[in-house]
Image 1 (spheres, helix red, strand yellow):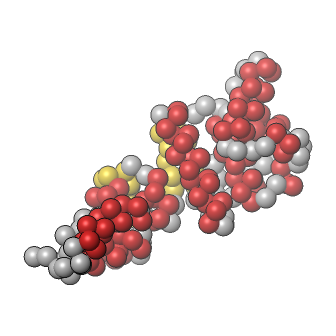
Image 2 (cartoon, one colour):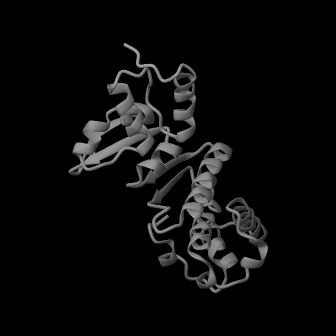
Length: 200
């Protein structure tokens, strides 16, 4: 899926747009429509939107329609280029949760290209960090973000919560790496219950 999905939407209706990929796979018309409707439902597009022009959709709906068009082809590898760019926080959260849900249901490979470290922290199992056109790091998400200073030297900002826990760790608190607020709370609650004493 391109960074700006509105550039890949072109059909008269949303349903026809989602059906475009499957229709080029030699499938029967009934199978094409089933795949398109299933994909639309999966990404949360309401039935009444399917007969509208894709250009009448909101930004978030266009993203979902573009993803549905790719999902309808049932790919083994799904590549998403900056899928949350330009979306408001709610739209970003909805889209990311749909991507994660799709991966959990389909068990396929998803390559998510993004400069948003928060998005990556919430969704990725592993991270490949590119720097000056070369692979600089490739590891599990937690291990990559544990190297926050190196990432910042490359111009990448670690998630804010990861940075805060890193500062606490430097100050002697017994905390590890946290990628999400929920993970940080689990680590900080025992310290707060102890009265916030510094250890070691």
